[in-house]
Length: 188
Image (cartoon, rainbow, N blue to C red):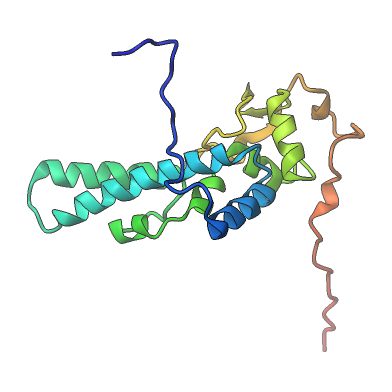
């Protein structure tokens, strides 16, 4: 069973430590998503690897009338749909087409930035860690929290956070997204 105080690693390190192409790709991902270290990328790759392995095993049994097979396919696809990684009408092939960026886009840190609650991905991480972000009014302090599709619209500042006040100076301005200009239509 193991000691409960000694948790197992939730990621696998790269097999070769000095691949220039992989290092460059990981550095770009770290900048783009404001990650703390490469371990977070490796965790996302491990999650993706598990999904793809399960999908490959199920694809090997395609056409089977086994009820266990059908239930496993349904469970995997429902999980991926709930996590908003694939569309509702997706197949197992769509699961194999997932990338690491698809997994990184579902992190709370990334969604806080994309929603406009933070000016940069790094600031989004800081807001989450410092307890300024809540999902459905419940404070979440884990930047790597995988946000489900139904929780995405409920991400906001924590009610007891000073940033909850719209006039707070550290809060990004609401007009960060450029709005299209209205064009007058002349009637004839």
